[in-house]
Amino acid sequence: MYDRKEIEQILLNKLDEHSNFLKLQYKANVNRIPFFYVDDLFPLDLATNIFDVFPKETQTTLKKSLKEHKYVAAQMDRYDNLLEEVIYAFQQPQIVTKIEKICGLSNLQPDENLYAGGISMMREGNFLNPHLDNSHDKDRNFWRVLNLLYYVTPDWKESYGGNLELWPEGVKNKPTKIHAKFNRLVVMATHANSWHSVEKVTRPGVRCCVSNYYFSATPITKNAKFHVTTFRGRPEQKFRDKLLMVDSFARMQIRKIFKKGIVENPHVYKK
Image (cartoon, rainbow, N blue to C red; front, side, top):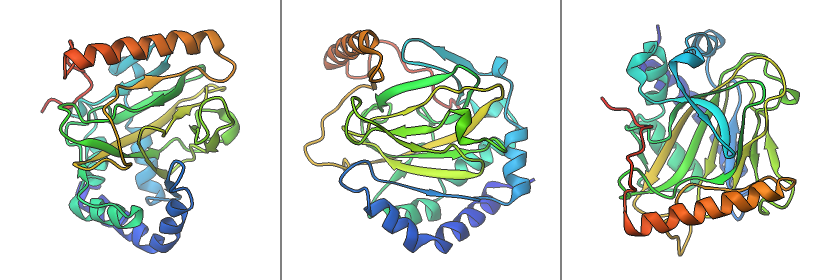
């Protein structure tokens, strides 16, 4: 089995190989929602093995509401060790430094606690509504600046749904769709205007994803302010949009009083 150091070297070689193109791709969207993606990230046997060891939904946490419908997990020692090795390969210093250079950022810090990171799965009918990620880490010490999403379901066609959507012009306009293609890594910036979502899955099967976040002492945009995870309705979901805005407003008021919230977010890796 591959360990994180071997995976790190494979990842580093791939990023080095495409470094110049990835810089241009990220810069092309720097005034919107900056992102880049890399295809065929890992050798086929490794990518396939990662998918094969994903747990069953019954071994994960179901998140189901007007905001989202998906399965998530962060307590990685409950699952096959390969999943943990892959997740933490993305957190190795050489990888963080390489991604810093591609994105023109500095002093990034990976999140060993997997606060909202880890793994996720979506089945037919599952979705994630347009939202802004929480602006900070779990202790509100650092700003969230990058979201790393690695898709691992073989033969996942764009027509199956479950694709990443970016809304650079806001949630009332048409999004940019990024195919959740097998063995593809997407790296996107997170800031106060980086609205994103996952469209509804439309076929039987499971869309699997490995995710990481990078944080920094400095926000990615000027005049940034703390905000909770904020959801909106899709353009056709006018009533849901109103409900979600009320929900976000209420949770934001609570966080003004209770800095770390009333209840601790359970989605962390407790080692």
